[in-house]
Image: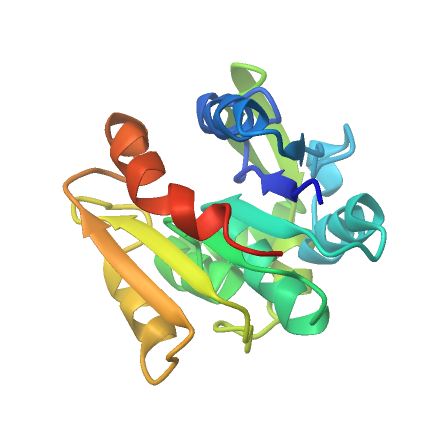
Length: 210
């Protein structure tokens, strides 16, 4: 049976990201089928957690797929898996657990300004330019749990030097969950300098029986 994967990119990223291309190339070389949906559906300004979960649901189409998620994509993968038990397994790269709650707490006064103005400018790494994002991203995100109850086998890689999403969030997620393994690597949030190491350690996990 051909193994099927969805790669879920992070906030302000795209299906053309370096990590997405890396895992797609490695997995396709192993005979797997890999899809990398655009989680924004071309509408970055009106991005919400709910909309992105619908994109994943449409791409998975009820199939038994494994999910690879980076940053916000990792959090989305866990949210989706908690609601779709047919999901096979999860590889999470610096997952942004508690995305809306953690971000709201970090922004402080900027959060109220974002709320009042209705949108805030963010640099979109895929488009290489600043784009507005609606405050609905926070409003919608706050309805979701910080640590989804995903019961699938889960392997997490998190950089010890990650200043965007602290590795403690991944360790907290893994606490008292025998299905979750966390590997801390000497890297930052992007993990780009550790991709080969991650692949070597994750290959058998990803290609396990589905």
